[in-house]
Length: 223
Image (cartoon, rainbow, N blue to C red; front, top):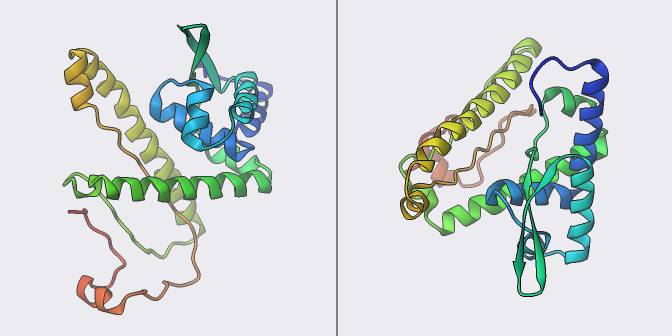
């Protein structure tokens, strides 16, 4: 999206496009794949998410109309022309967009996000990615009033965008390397942040583990 001050009409247009882009779980999954792979074709995305090429191609067309993705280039393989796309937006919604999304869209987006997070955590565990000493995992329960809850929500969003901003500097440093070294030093990392109200701290599932780790209200860096 371009920089500068947007009029109320411009903001409304952007909101509608974003809601339409995120309004179906397959489109959300497509955006996740394109974000992770930088560029990909409908057939490759269909293979990754386990959907038919026709179904995925249909949702690609909607995403393109929403200006959520763009055609990067075309490759000719034999007699086949492969269209490669990249994501222009991430499968995320800021506070303002989230507030104005219809409830069914919010529920679908939340469900798809949680499923994707759990799938990625399991994959990282299988690949021993969670053993990296830089991996950070925290679980905390805090008591806030309405004002504190609102401020915490904004700080979480700000933190995520600050982490995402590091990508620009990393891209510049990686671009200076030769292709082989660039590939070896590129680290795809995932940021999962959740902030939500609960009625009470849930009882631990495993009392023996809980007694060894303490109260359980504060997480620590994973080792």
